[in-house]
Structures are given as structure tokens and as C-alpha cells.
Length: 446
Image 1 (tube, rainbow, N blue to C red):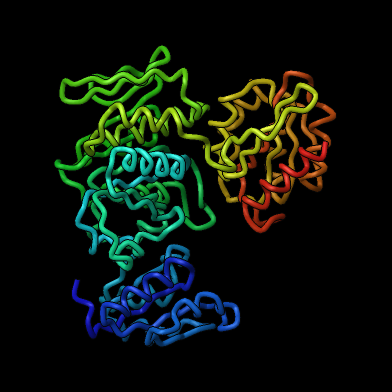
Image 2 (image 1 turned 90 degrees about the vertical axis):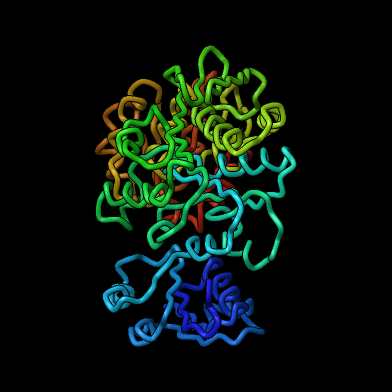
């Protein structure tokens, strides 16, 4: 990619934007960075750019700067409908996302993972499988390290594994994974997208540039996924925990079976540490990606057996008075909570937080069937009570700590207290990690 002397603009100075600005400057581009925050607010990121000749436009976005740029690189947090971006697009300026820029520097197989839920677990597991198989592997994207940092580091790799969000896919043009996985679809980010279909369309762009030589690993059990992947150019490779597949990977009678080109591998699940129906799907998706890209079955299964649950996703906290407490703070949407509820019975569910605009109605059958008590917190309390409150014994709490105390009082021995919010955390907490730590502390204080 020819960048020397090119007028480039990086929009947004979070971690991804900083990495993009550095790589563009190091390649000889004339770089400007712009962010609505002030220089004081951006002290940390700006320190990381010291030593580079980079112009700054802070506290505002000037449309003239956008129109004067040959190339605009957009950080994931910046919405597509930013007026200055629309003006630049109409003027024919080249606009791309960070993953599009990064992909121009990647010349090894790329496995890309998207979906509403399970991305981080699947990506981390897949990266671990590749490493155990002896590949020099870069793991990043929406998880931890921006993909562009691979180009900056000059690290020699055999394989790239990337978690990809819908935001990152919005400005791609040639981004093409060798294997792309779509784990599931449920309503999310409707505070960013005008409707559910627009969100789905953004997710589906992960397959846009694939050919018949590439693979699309997709959830056969998810009706939305299966309906939308018909007609892809890539070779479909489904996974299922409900249907036996002639070609694909599926779960039946305690065994995961992988079938491809007349070859079959079987993996018994009894000794796997990663529990929960959602993790069964994550394991199948990661296994499919790994084996399709040349990993050996034995080393792949060894990695799966040893892999532990990630923090804040269905994490066991402790047992008190014969009641088990689980923390699922990363469950920030309805689809994620559905998977959690499928994993337990006799549940006291603590839910609520900042409403993201989607319907809570898909939870109704599981709440009716499995939730003995529902305790609601945060801004979404009113809406959640309207949609779910009549289905079970429902309580309100003003704090998470109060919710834990109510749960301890009303949950019978043998039950499970599950904090799985279905909402983001920003009404009451800094982020989902702080919410998790507050829950854990409250449970430990019982």
C-alpha cells in the first residue's frame, strides 16, 4: 500500500486510532488526527504519538480537513453518519476502517470471528489452538491488541486470529478472511444502528470479499444466521448442537463430530472444562476454524480440554447456603442472557442496566420456565418489568449490592443466583468489569 506523502486523517484517538496514526506516520504519510475530546482529555493517547510528526485537530471536526485528505481511517467508535464523513464520502475521498488498513499488510491466513455473543471466547480459544499446534500466531482485533499493531510490530507470524465487531466492518472494501465465523445474531447496538437489519447487514460484511476458496463457519441452529448466509460465495461450513451434519461440525450424545471431505474426527466432551451450551457452540466454531486451516486434531483437542472460562462470562463466584452464585457481566444483550439461562434451572436472575434499545421479549419463554425470581436494577428496570415482570416473582433493587442481599434471602437451597444483565453497565458503573467486581464483592460479603 503506497502511503508516502499521502494526506491521511485518523478519526478518533482511542487505542485503535493511536496505532493507526503511528503506522501511517512510520510509512511516510502526512498524518492528522482528529477527536472531539480536548488535549487535556487525550493526554495519554497523545503521549503515545510523541516522536512522530502528526498534526492535531482536537475538540472539533473540521469538514475542510476531511475534504483535504486523500485517505481517512475511521476508529470503530466513530459512527458512519458523522456529517464530516458523509461529506468526504460524497466528495470521493477514500475512507476505510482500521481492519481494512491492517489487512493491506497481512499476507498470511486470517481467521476472523464475529457474532453478537461468544466472540472473545472463540477468538481466544482459536488463538490458543494455533499456538499449541506450533504456529506463530497473532491474536487481536476487537479483543486486546488492534489488528494494525501487527503491521507496526513487524512480528513474523504464520496465522492471524481476529475478533471483529460490526463497527469495524462498516468501512471495509477488500478485507477478506480465509475463514470467517458468524457465531450468532441477536438484537444489539440499536443505540448505534437505526434497526436490527442494519446491524445484521454490518455483521454479514465479514463474508463480503470471500471467494469459493474461503470458508464461512456459521451457526446452523440460529435461524437469522442460516437465513442470511444462503448464497455466500464462500464455502459454507455449519456447526450445530441440534442437527447431525454430513458436512460440518455437530454435537450429539456427548461427542463433537467434525466431518469434512469424507474425513471424520470425534471429540468427547465429558472432560472439557468450558461449560455451558453457549461454550459448546464456541468450541465447535473454534475447532472448525482450526481444522479447516490445517491444525492437527490431537493438539486441537488437548487445547480445548485445558481451556478455562474467560473472566466475567458465566464465572462461578462461590456457594453460600447451598446456593451457587454466577457472574455473567459480559452478557450485555438478550441473546447472551438466553444462552446463560439455558445452562441452569431454579434461577434467581439479577438483570438490568443501561437499556440498548432492543426487545426483552425473546427472554420470556426461558424466564417463565427457569427463573424463579427476577431482580431488576438500573435504568432498564421499568421496561424489563413491563416485558418480563408478570412471568415470575419480580423485585426491584436500587443497587447491585441490595440485589445480591435480596437474592440471598429469597433463593432456596439448590438454586442458582445469576447476574446476567442483558444491558450495558454505564448507568451505574464504569464498565462491565467494575460491575462484575462489585457483584463478586457483594457475594463474598454474604
